[in-house]
Amino acid sequence: MSGVAEADDCHAYGCAEKQFAAAVREGRERRQMTQATLALVMSKGGFRWRQQTVTRAENARRPFFLGEALALSALLGIDLNAIADGADSPLRACDTCRDQPPPGFTCNECGRRAG
Image (cartoon, rainbow, N blue to C red; front, side, top):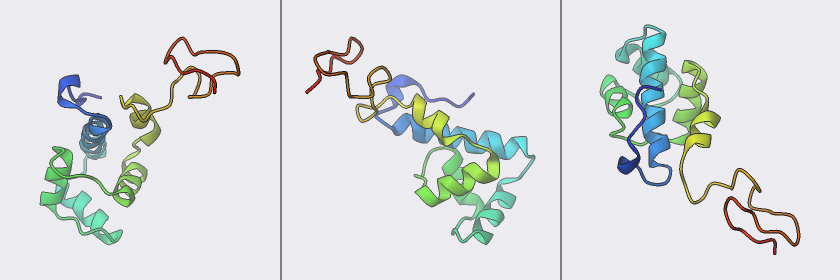
């Protein structure tokens, strides 16, 4: 994605929020949809969105509620899993052992010991 935030500008899932904001803009533009049209579609879906809401959301100046993120991902073809997988967070499970190394082993990637 072209709008990926710089690493020093992020914290935990803050990068994912910025990546999602960029994905919303890219998805909207790819579909040749104006901000006003996206706001109207979201409003018809039960969300209180105006053109200014779209502007703030696309610039990561307002957080997304879960329902909004789900609706936007479906509408604009955004892969939430890809964004979540790219998030650098201490809450994210280790890719190697999934936080559960086999009994008697220590994961070389995250250092977690089997308990």
